[in-house]
Length: 140
Image 1 (tube, one colour):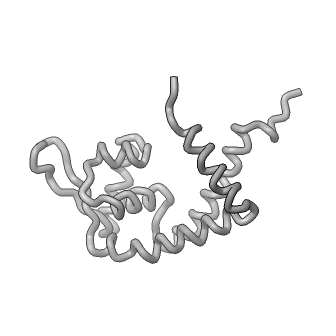
Image 2: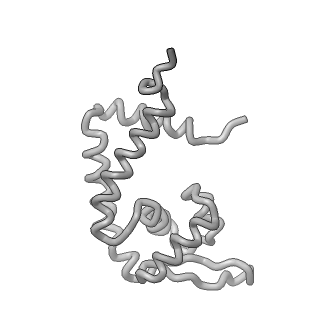
């Protein structure tokens, strides 16, 4: 008989749900969602990305990403500016508010991650990260 509770798909889904819940609880205090945080985190690394570049980096489809950016814009965290070489595109930039929260929100994310992986050794964490990176990449 198939042991669903031991299957990789089931375990990944349940681990994701737990991690999402832990992070949502903490980041929600800042009126943010985990996907909004990921957009900000990529902009902290490289500000002024196009929505297409952000979509590729976050692996969030462009339509969904547009809504996330709309909400971040309303919150005063980011702003869109016309692309200088492409009339159809916009660049997404952090505002002062969005930039200023990078340290605090990054520390918060680190604390949530520590809590989430507290049952794993540093070697286990490294190995898990390595394996998940393999699984997330598209292969034929």
